[in-house]
Structure formats: C-alpha cells, structure tokens
Amino acid sequence: MRAAEAPGLIAPPRRPCCELGARHGVAHCTHGALGIGPDRPRLATWCLVSSGLSRYVLGMQELFRGHSKMREFLAHSAKVHSVAWSCDGRRLASGSFDKTASVFLLEKDRLVKENNYRGHGDSVDQLCWHPSNPDLFVTASGDKTIRIWDVRTTKCIATVNTKGENINICWSPDGQTIAVGNKDDVVTFIDAKTHRSKAEEQFKFEVNEISWNNDNNMFFLTNGNGCINILSYPELKPVQSINAHPSNCICIKFDPMGKYFATGSADALVSLWDVDELVCVRCFSRLDWPVRTLSFSHDGKMLASASEDHFIDIAEVETGDKLWEVQCESPTFTVAWHPKRPLLAFACDDKDGKYDSSREAGTVKLFGLPNDS
Image (cartoon, rainbow, N blue to C red):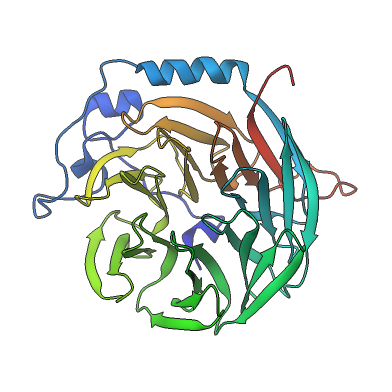
C-alpha cells in the first residue's frame, strides 16, 4: 500500500536548515531538508534565498485575484482517484472508486459531461491520456486489467490482462508504450499498438509512482525507501538510485519544459530536481502531511502540490515562493494543470461528514475561473 493511501499517517517533524527557510516556508538548503550529508556531493548544498517576489509571481497573483473562482462538477458516485487533461486541453478525464471513468468537455468556463466509461470490475486508480492523440486515454484498475478508450467511439478499444491489481500507469512520451504498476511491485511495459507485453520487471522495493523522462530514454520510479530509481529505456538497466527523502517517496512529475522533475514524500516535502544533473535544487515545505499528488503548469513555471492538508499549494518553480493557496474542505487525491492555461483540475475526499446522504459523492473541481463567470 502506498503511503498516500494511509489516512492516519502522520508526517515526521521537519526543521528548515536556516531561519530564512522557516520564514518563507521553503527549505532552500537541501542538505538540511532532505537529511543528506556531505557523503552525497552531487546534491546541491547551498542556500538559495529569495530577496523578494518575482515579477512572474506578482503577475500570477494579480491574475488569480480575478480568477479565483472554483466550481465543482458531479462525475462519479464515489470518490475520484485521478484526473487528467487531454493533450489539447479540450477534455478532462476522471477515474473513480465506482469502477468507471468519466470524460468532460471544457466549454468556456465550465465542464460538460460527455460520457461515462464502464467495463472495469474494480476501482479505477489512475488514468492518463495519449501524449499526442487527444482521443485516446488508458485506465488502470484493481481488476488486473488496463483498458484503452477512444472518445470518438466511446468504447474500449483494448483490454489488456495483467498479473496484479494495478495502481499506477503512464504513457511514454513517444506514444508507443504504456507502463503499468501493480500492488506486487511489478511494472509491465505494454505495446500501445499491439496491446501485448514487451517487458516486465519485478522490483524488490515498494513501487509508488512511475514515469518516463521527457526524452523517453530513462524510466523513473519512486519507492517506499525514499529513493528515486532510474532505469535506462528501453534496456531497463539500472542507471542510478537517488536517496531523495528520509521517508516514503510517493509521487513524481516532470515539467513540460524538460528542465526539472519534482517528487513528493511522506515527510511532507516536495523536492525539485535538475533533470540533466540529477541534483536537488530546492524544496517546498508548506504542507504538513504526506504529499500525494503534484502537477506542473503548462509553462513549467508553477507547481501545484497537495496532501491531507486542506489546501493546495501553488509555488513558483524557480524560487519556491508561494504563489497561491487553493482552499479545500478535505484531503486532495489528485491535481492536474490544464496544458494551455492556468486552470487547475483536482479532486478531494468527498466523504468528510459535510455531505448529506441524499447527495452523491465523486466531484471534480476546477480552480482558476473568472470571478464574474
């Protein structure tokens, strides 16, 4: 079980390495924040201190002051585990504990439900879209299958049987391969055209989230020991293992520009890494609970992170400065920035005692809408 699934998990206390880090809510000095000593010389050990808010932060804060409206849209009959935008930004898909996926069309400033996709026999834990075809998406389920769907026909075009209960999935940047991980820490690589398994890897550690780098030549896994494991692709040979966090490393995301990737951990820290140097350049420490989900904005300049805290932190990537805070009434499971505009989709744990029994759970939410919409 991933740490993100453990509702009672309490994050260990963290100490910023300097007073400025404490004041700004950013653990600028990575050796203190990550528990990394001088025996790890490849990691940055200097302090980066922001002297003031950047022009970008001030500009985006001004934008969000006029675009801070949030709307919710009924998507499922149970809690939503995953949301993702199609590459053209026209559609938002969601996967749920109710065993279905839903797809919405984005029309002006609202989501209009297009279809509900049924067929899985268990919870849909994660989904993702084809990186360049806006009509195809894939779902991973606890029913030991993945399903590829085409929004043009609204039908499942392929069902691929796997060996275990699937909990994470990603599509390679070149669109040729789908990787799926299960609860037994097996990652299967599936040919997206033939729908047959190309390779399978059993890992001896708890695999949390998986992702290719933007260049498609390396494959990254976050694990239960706080490490980032990097494999060459397609050879799947170990390249490096990075001790990224002192506790469970839960999630990983690459920025669209290919400059950074970010990881979130059970220590409540988000760490930002240089893709080429594999060096941690800064940390974000405003959350108090295990970081469940991350998303970079389309321009790679903003990073949204969320946890059981009742807010989503939006930071400027280059400085770590707080840009905005999206208030939530319950823990957040999944966040996803729109691929072309500053619009954030997310989903929370709806069952927090505030819903009456006559109302269905399972909403997706949008932040960044005009206040007068």
